[in-house]
Image (cartoon, rainbow, N blue to C red; front, side):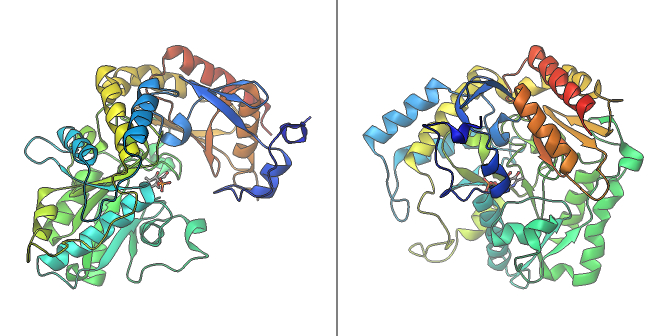
Length: 445
Ligand SMILES: Cc1ncc(COP(=O)(O)O)c(C=O)c1O
């Protein structure tokens, strides 16, 4: 009997679910009821190992009492406060704490922090900041935004304009002038690699081609995910990000790293910026910022970007932008408690300790049916399956359902399985992932 046919099961009609095949889901729902540590419990009482940290956000694992208590304390002290021409101490405190661990080397840290409510809002905020910055320094013709094929930058109109996913774009208009680099995924040369692949740094030169095509004086910024997650774990080739940085510098183009999934320890350093030792001008974040407990995002901006906008009459609002929930007190409380946990449990660097065992576990799946590539970096893995003829995504979807029924939550995009377990995982969890997924692959058709 399906959960939704049980007497006290929820009625599923009214909730229009995001990024979900609503009719298919409601015919056979998968419902989660509670979560603790590395596991969910489904509404039919099964324990499900979380292979995806929820949606790349629950880096410290589920059910952290410290976060819940901090949020409760804050909500009973002051539930909400306006952030426009008003302030509340906890937002400043959280920004100061973030500034201490901000992406970038000492002396160049991106330590000016703007709060948003999500990754999508962080992306649109950073894109607007880039255009405002260019205008502030007398480069007002620079309004064009460059993204990359197969990039995911959320679902705002800015994010889908620089994003490179067909289904996110085909129905909706985009910002005029946005353009794209080619993606870096080249399984013919780079299959079954642990860490950064060897081939493809020259793809960064696409930015030179776009400069030649459009003129540098029209381009405000280039945004990329240092490791692309949503389109199936695309790891930057060695030298690629460095080359992109150099081309941006040469042409006065701001570089934005979208670290919504790589921020807060996913690669074994606080940010991908630190892991790859390439410093952009802005970093977008969300998800792990509050361990997923309360929705929140942030943009980390360099002093160069921030200070350029701190001009004009002192009574003028420097950036006409913000959200009702920017710096929400409960989200800030969750964020500070999250940072405490990351620090106390060494979670910002734990992926570096786990990564060899993780990579070995994931690459042990090589040779199983339909596996055509495995790529790993930090505590991330992408396992690419051969697609069924004429049915892209169908095979991985079946594997996803099979794994869920056997007690493992995986994430699929097209025919790529993506893993990003909570950073509290250990080798036993890796073994369990390999075992459940391996069996599902052997059953796959
Ligand atoms: C790189 C990246 N940017 C932006 C987003 C959008 O974040 P949100 O869903 O919080 O709007 C995501 C979400 O997965 C993401 O992976």
